Amino acid sequence: MTILVTGGTGKTGRRIAARLQTLGHAVRVGSRTGAPPFDPPFDWADRATWAPALDGAHAAYIAYYPDLAFPGALEDLRAFTEQAVKAGVGRLVLLSGRGEALAEAGEQVVRESGVAWTIVRCGWFMQNFSEGYLVEPVRDGVIALPAGEVAEPFVDVDDIADVSVAALTEDGHAGMLYELTGPRLLTFADVAAELSEATGRPITYVPVTAEEYAAGAAAHGVPPGEIELLTMLFTEILDGRNAYVADGVRAALGRPARDFKDFARDNAAVWVTGG
Image (cartoon, rainbow, N blue to C red; front, side, top):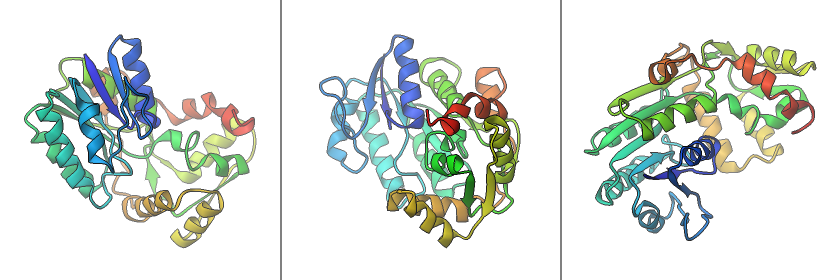
């Protein structure tokens, strides 16, 4: 089975692609650079790249960039889904966001596609602390965010990948919405304490305003578009609406979700030695 993985070099996509390849599936890694002839370039901003990536694919993992909550995302998702179905794709797995009205509208587009679908709805990734925009702040020992004291059930991206691969390759997941979280609610102050314990060095959380956060992110070299997205997510989504634990990992895989403590312990070297 040939499977297109959009966002194939991102946090979820590269893990999904690697797992699928290990299972023996033909994987088409959708990225803006591509690796022709096997992986033609795929760019959400260039619809001309969609058809070559979809040609011959039986299933597709959809990770929209930059986010389903961005203007134009719904129109892109609808056009891509229609094109995928016409190309013969028979199974769609959508990465969605918790508590985002526009993301839920995108989910409905996939539900109405007429082919087998699975929704993987997730919140904040644990790996944002080890692979993303929060790596350097953690190394510096100060996590300054406009998050107040809101709690979040951070989810491990490896759990997302495992659930997505199951949905792409196994029976029994069609028509399912899996809401994925970790097993505990943690404030960002709790996260800082967990990271301090794992690394053996003090890491603190400092609440800041959205404006202060944007200025600090820019100083750390975060691209303006990503700063805009993150500021929107912090100010509009992180308001307590997602402060509950869901059982999607267990429902999909029959095992518990990974705990943040285990994630922090296993990634301690990233923050202590930089690798």
